[in-house]
Image 1 (cartoon, helix red, strand yellow):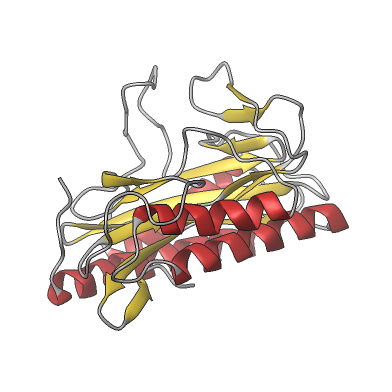
Image 2 (image 1 turned 60 degrees about the vertical axis):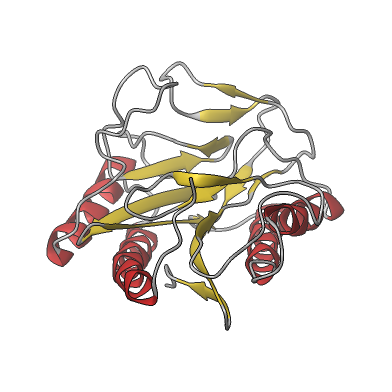
Length: 255
């Protein structure tokens, strides 16, 4: 069931989203060559603590997971697409890092992700990230009253496919509200004019995931969480929590 949020609820979700934005900004600023993923997780934890927020990631255990998630960020490096568990891995020059973070504040959730390069970037990585951001922007632009979920999915997928990138099937965005994951699902590829009609008060996480090689294959790593590209090519993941309003899309997790 899809819950329509009131303007007051959306404002409260915006407060949670701002915490997420601050956490991601702090992580990006701290992400340098030689820094460990666990150290970045601690940076995000401190931002949540200072805001009086909690993490919807920490201890989260969906049906597919063998263990509860042990961190407040997902840190996915290079060929890791999403759900990377922070470890003592030390970042290297040229690593492509995707960071996903959530926050719960006063009973409402926010969810967002960024991708960036640590140190000297490869031009191919910059193009991948730029396309991911463009796909996100086009998906957000389609999140308007009168459109359907398929219009968002089509906008995201078209931006990815036109640029020659792969899309991991079965993973995409979702509703956000009192919980981090709510109905409806928001695929990263689909047919326009299909799916659930978009109504004012819907709040959605739109999150493109791109595979550099153009192939869609991925597999689950031995940790039971991390998804990696089958061919070892690099991946990017970006995300915003967005409210559908009568005046247009409202980004709740701006940075």
